[in-house]
Length: 398
Image 1 (cartoon, rainbow, N blue to C red):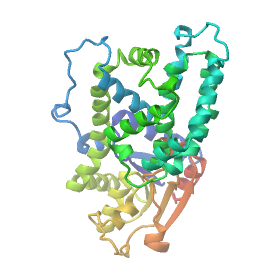
Image 2: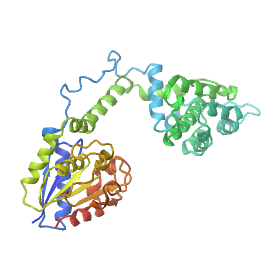
Image 3: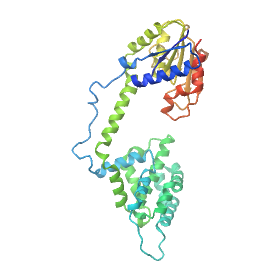
Image 4: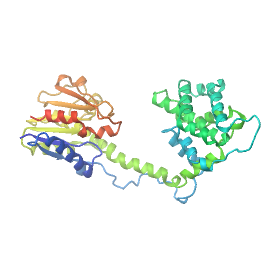
């Protein structure tokens, strides 16, 4: 009777381990009732933890009440934090406030309706030689036209047109959205190290210059209504936003990055745990190792003879660690030892933590590509719901 041993990856603790082990067990035993599925939970005893409970995390100023509005500097940081992920964020925020937006309802001969004026102003902005020169000077020449097209064709821009908000209030946010979209595109396209991305003063000067270069009606740095909307949105978030976000990041990193750092410092105890679990099972044993678990098992099986074992790595960076000469049991450039077991490596192209093994280890390993149909990082944990992955695991069980 074949035994399957699941070795989990980085950042996993008991609840998620039990859930994943149950999922794997059900998916395999539904097809092969004779299989026995076991788990090696090394994270409980050998995983990372914050021994001082996060005392090293800087705490934000707690003197301001939770409901107090953000100070201007903090408000600007919060707005740009959102804009770097979603260039349309501020424009969407303004459409939510249309019911209370200031409107110019008086009659003015020869004046365009507000929405049409906004569209025409943006066309002039996109066609302006001065505007293009400013984008060129910021290193965003290649992103300027596409950013303008995205903003102008967006649904939210159309809503602003139809909403009739005063253009002087909306215009600074429209300019910021265009700049943010160009910056996002430059980052995504691996543009050179640009000051507009990392130098706040440079970015603010760039955006202010864009606003000053437009028509007189739209020269306000930030309209009162727009400022009020942003301030209201962040009022209950401003005091604790940075602390919560940094604390959540530290909690996550202490598990994910922390486990990797601990393994690099001294992985002997982790590898012994895996070896003990394998030795406790009657051969043949198929070891299914996910993520960091795959690195552990490559290190272990390259240095320890464990008869009757087959290895299946899933979403692992073990081949990359070999290339970086970061493995304990196998130096970069060295081949797999003669006694190394049969090895199948499963990866998803979208999983940034998964690497192929055959190009560096040759025919000693078989790579199997699967498509979990999800973006990173969700695809890294979705292998167990993939039919091709399940079939490959079953095929590795004698």
